[in-house]
Length: 416
Image: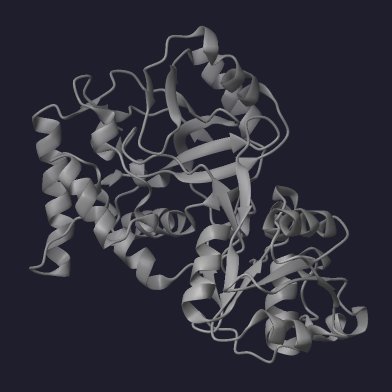
């Protein structure tokens, strides 16, 4: 169930454009420095605190910073608990959902479904930070489908006054509304109670929530704010996210060589290297019939479209204990069939690298004298089908956007 909470937000006289940030996991060291320079109270000082003295000190520093900002009214708690409707909109797309405190449940319960594995080091870092600050600094991002009372409430807020309406550095218009009517909250709760949802982003934060809850119960604390976690819940059938592929780079191996190795294993189409837009359109069309991949050399001179894997060879290459939903994923075919079986490459992060957009992928291929491997996006329905079966997708399978902007709403346990 998604519970209302008292949001901790920047005061009315604070310029939100200078104090919010992208999520912690997409900010590099230069990005941290730029955000710190933008404002002495930028939220990056909480989510990625820097302290050269020791690793432990920086978590305590974040905790003291949060307390100081509360004491000086930089951050102010809302007076009443609410579910918040949060919208991120561009000229072409609007994503809108509910921010609330989600009752935690392990993946084995089949309520909150992960689709990626987590890394223990990242969870340990977030757990140390969230334990020190005693707050949820960033939401996890869940998607579900099906309409209902919650979706109707989200769609109806235009008639209500917004708590904030601002365009931020990401170029998106961000709006926030508070839902506080008890009858409406009860209707939303009844609608959401039997549903399941897939983690679109925030696997490490959800694992952090679960470990923090377990530690609190082991310490004999009983029920408390650690039994819920800050969550952004979006109905994918209404105001859903955009889904983008995460492309691959094979360094040091030219596209013509990878295409040569693929002959007989897939159908290889020679495309015009001077018209990348047409090649991407061909990739999208081919994806309607099954797995398809576009190979582009770093200099752009070679463009090959790979389609229609050899059925018998593909069947032998894919793990036999996986579901049909998992075996049908383009990323499964890419890693287990093309990379390992057809190309004979090691499937590790040095041999197969990642980039989030076409331009960056082509640049990385050019810098390494290698090949950009461009993919189609994985449909939300395919992600859901794999997650519902208790499976995990191959690493870096898909990118849901836009991600919630960090700093607009914090859930401090002192306000529970």
